[in-house]
Amino acid sequence: MKLNTSYIKCLLLLAVVFSVACKKLVDIDEPIDTVTSVKIFNSDDQASQTLAGLYSQMVGTDGAPLLTFGGASIYGGLASDELVPSNPVDYSEENEFFTNSILIGNTQSENVLWTAAYKTIYAANAILDGEQASTSAQFTPGKRNELKASAKFIRAFGFFYLTNFYGEIPLPLSSKYSETIKLTRVSQQAVYEQIIKDLTEAIALFPQSTASSTVKSKANQLSAEALLARTYLYAKNWEQAALHANNVMNSGQFSLGTLANTFEKNSTETIFELNVNRSILTGRLNETVYLAPYLSLYLLPEADQEIFLDPSAYAEFQPYLVPLFYLNENLVNAFESGDQRKTTWVNYNGSPTDAPYNGKKYYFSNKYPNDEQERTSYIVIRLAEMYLIRAEALAMQNKTDLALADLNKIRNRAGLGNSLATDQSSILVAIAQERRSELFTEWGHRFFDLKRTGKAISELAKTPEKSAINTNKLLFPIPSKEIIANPRLTQNPGY
View 1 (cartoon, rainbow, N blue to C red):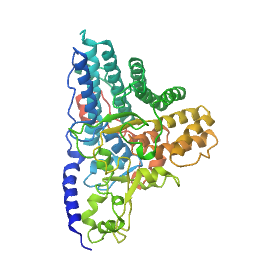
View 2: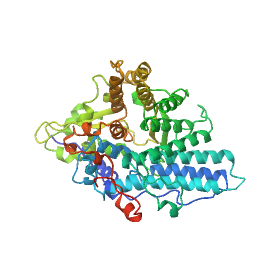
View 3: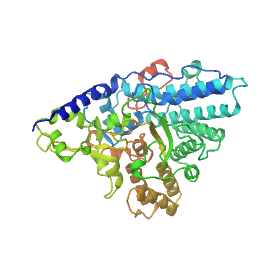
View 4: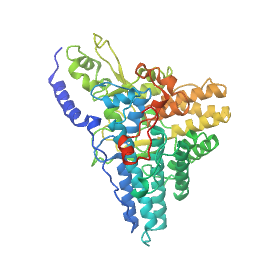
């Protein structure tokens, strides 16, 4: 079958996009600091500009993955049972996450996760130090509180992800190098205590959130409560987890919309999102660049799809049809029959039925569809998670009827009937299943859930490439350069 001119032009365009956007992760430069030094604030305007710079730093300036801009989803998904690398040779460092055999010198772990997170934490600390040092009358109490609360929220956010990827971590609370260079690692319990302290203080400092005052792209009282609810869940404080999730849910500011609208800017479900500055960042978000193909066949008429699946030409098209990291079949097969999340948030590109392709389907996350390349928002925390947090926290307190009510709210939105679970044990299993189906490829939820519930070894071993998984491999290695710079730091066991 011959390809017509329009498809040749399409391929040429795709090749240009591919060469620009598909820069190998290992070659990406480290993120650039937006906030690089302590500023003693002289005015509200200066404080606002600096805070805007801190949010901008979380999504970077060049589209490269950062922990807070695709990194948590990509590497958390690879380390769990969500994602599979399509090219493990060229993406060997990413394949280390997939096989849970990360080497100490892995630059993705070092630069995209560890270094990027600590740079943002340093910037938040610099803001807190600068606020404390300022005596300017032009720097008003209201702006001071907003600045401090926002910096504490962002610092807590960074600590949360670092401790869940690396376990015990250094806990810098100052921007002074002379202090931070001497830090040792502290227990995850101590990290959670600091996160809880930061978020509790942030909630007190933020003005009370109202429907008219809440800007979802800026941290506020309710986004701090949402992260606090998650932290208490991980810390196994069920009462506090339920309480703070309840506060967010009962604020009247959020509601579950349709599955198709969940990831839209200012969705009714969004609690916190990051703005994507389209004057700096163009093209697709990282979850789409790495988790979705450049050409989704389902967007084409069936007759046109056959052109791309012609066995004689498929090898040429394959790089554009197969995502860099496609969905693990274990995840795809885990959806219940009739679950509309699978039909709405998952899609696939087929392959020729002839050998060596054998009709393999490459499933991919469709939460950020390919045809919407100019998105200006990046969803971070959403209401569905709060329902699932409250459900789990209530179930752990044997409040089974209340837990089922929250669980069924999420199931019903997905087109499923009420859960058949009846006791605490079966309800917790059902909640874990809903978290898997609802939060897949989002912010490392699955990887963290498996670890905190003690299911990681048994579940991950179901993927053949992970059959040698052991407890040591559930934490990422501390970057060797950090240990060389600070001999007080120790390495995680097994590395």
